[in-house]
Length: 411
Image (cartoon, rainbow, N blue to C red; front, side):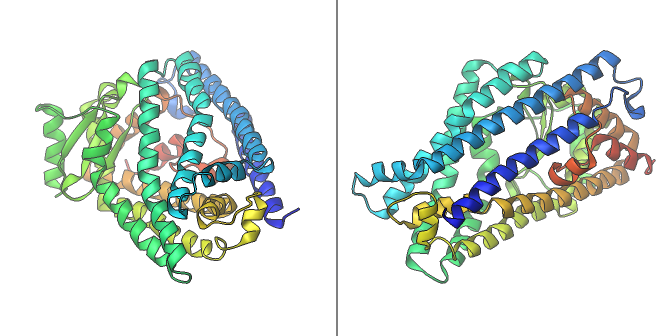
């Protein structure tokens, strides 16, 4: 057997087994006893229901990840990549156009394969637990929009990669890295005003007590932004969130309308301060810069594989091409991607503690942040007792109880 193919099969199976192991550890960690921090807030029946949600969510993930693994292995072993390539070559296009078509077909196939899972998660799992508010028509419209967005954001960098790796044997990866990095920065800049409005409606928070509290805090701490917006998340889900979008003049902080409905103004102020803390502490810049650096490493390593006939042979592709090897290398790169995510998650968890500390320091609202975390955890049926190993490998936020314990020390 081709050594690359054997390695890829082992890696894909190991990745699935790791996912099952982590999920099993979390299931075994579930505790019927409510954590002390949530006594008096979480009713016993609602807490029990949240644990059932976690069990169902995990089992669904096990089942679907197994389906995806089986489909991918069959696709590889039965020469699926080669079939797609052969069909494209019938058109006798040049490698550039053939490569874009090859990538388009694979992206659409991937999206379609995941559609049943997304549908069942939304209208089966979340609907059963009262977390879904999306209508089926909106679901399919969003699916089409996200597919088109995926193509729009993936194909230009892929086109650059085909061109650079074809024309610059040694330094092609540098050209790709530079152009892709510029493209990513550009996409972050236009995201708030040109991309996000296609998926949610955004309105500046109207004049009043909440607006005064948030804009007053921003002015007091010299935080430049285009405004504070609320999104109409409630028409899709009962879950709430807050985030920073864009940068420079386009930077805005977005609070979901579900968040505004569920929290008091002092709580919303400290949540807002938490997001400002990410900016003031340099987290947002870091979280954008680190993936760019990681992409540079990936593109550098790709330089040693994309001209290898052995890689094409591993996937049963008869005709060697740069464009096919670019996509196949992403599968070969899976172990490095897993390691990268573990490191990034650890950095993100540390940054969350820092942003909490900044919010408490600038608002004096440790108690308000604790209240906000408790409400958020309850409303989205979060796992309050995750296994430490699972946290270390896959959580990009610290567990809620641990964040609350850190906040208690700041009171």
